[in-house]
Length: 134
Image (cartoon, rainbow, N blue to C red; front, side, top):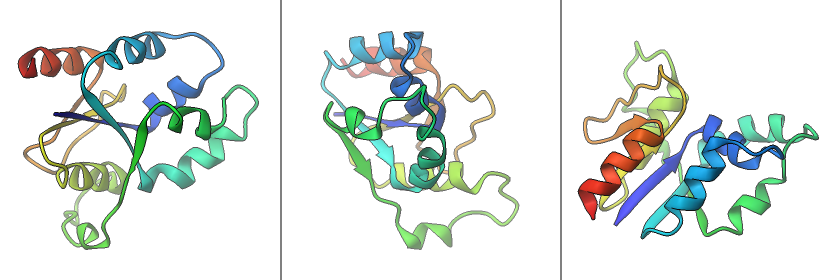
């Protein structure tokens, strides 16, 4: 089973009322046996953006068999003190709790995982990992 964690920027692309490459990739990926997740730690960030008229409501994405990935408070203690992006760190630590291969789908070229088993990257990484798991 392949788990794909949707980072903030990917969620916004998927909820955009405009067509984009991320939506196209998502439709293709839904045809595979992939479990998609939205990290709970992104909810407050997403709520601020989704009030904008150019986005669909978050519930429209959740109807597409995407699940919430719980954020564990114990993971806060595992984030290095010198970490520059605590949200990204939390996402990678939460992702590591899932069984199977897990990656973070992000369009952020500066995304950094603090967990050695969790990679983050754009659709090219997603397709590469998918090919390895088939």
